[in-house]
Image (cartoon, rainbow, N blue to C red; front, side, top):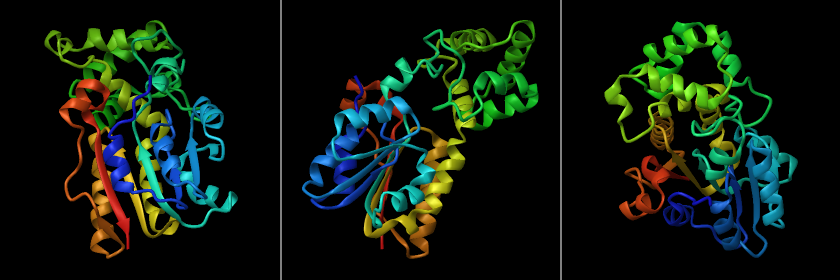
Length: 288
């Protein structure tokens, strides 16, 4: 079952009111959408988007009246025009994964399952199995280091390319096993699976996640109404750094007011109930 991360804190930050207009740029499992939709009634409008077609099918089934669209959040400016939305009062971006996306996608996001090594949200992006096949060892190591902050990136890239030459790496479980064998014995006993950072890096790279985040943040002042509120939940230090930098810069320019002076993290109780929340970070801003 999908458990939305930092739900109470996010809703308090966004403060949705009856009749307001909101966008959930990352519908996922719909937990934040549900709370926002209930609070903006009557006459509120909500655009929920996700790259994952199954997520949007769920949205259409569960939320009558919500505009549910298969898209990337970089397309929000065009979608607001297409669906005749005014500038919006609130925007939520949850940059993590729903449990369903990890466990039931069939696209290789989880290293626990034997699935095709796609790791893309839809079929428009190049799958990770092709990236591995086409990328030189040094470049692959750079990807794993840059996007996964994996200190054993060179050893891992060497092992992946060596194994791929022998037999193409096309499933998630095989990739995970290669990574596990490549890292030092002590690293395998870490509290996280040794393939976690490599999988994260390849997913971020394949879906251009950091570039897409920067593109949307550049458009914020264009799409938000005065006094509009933005909440971003990130799970990766590189994502959080981008959000923090943009919010601070726009605050200096007098366009934003940061409403989270310090990053908001999950409570110990939330982490206990939902271990996937442990790396979540929430930041918010208000349009002046």
